[in-house]
Length: 97
Image (tube, rainbow, N blue to C red; front, side, top):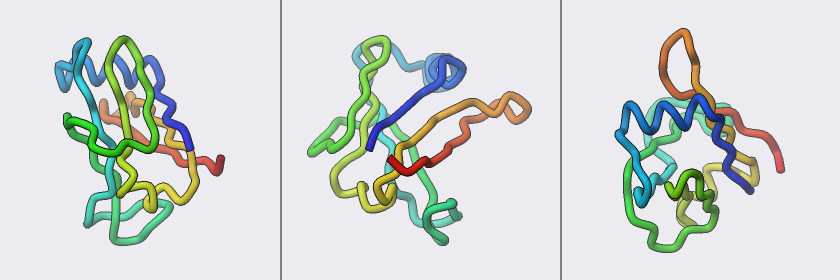
């Protein structure tokens, strides 16, 4: 399982979340909504400190990660984070590793 972040999405993190070198951003399973992987759960994202990260990606000295306890949500899929330019918000795609 891996995390992929497009350059457009990276710009979104820097502009909208004011992410900068040294920050840590976690993707996690969130109760509510739906996703292609699980009805009733969607992906959440927040600035956080890793406890037991199972997947990490360092881009521009910003750490993106998924905690071991949220691994079930991704069901062995890689996470692709892109920008929906029409809505100016992040979009997520899951592809089996």
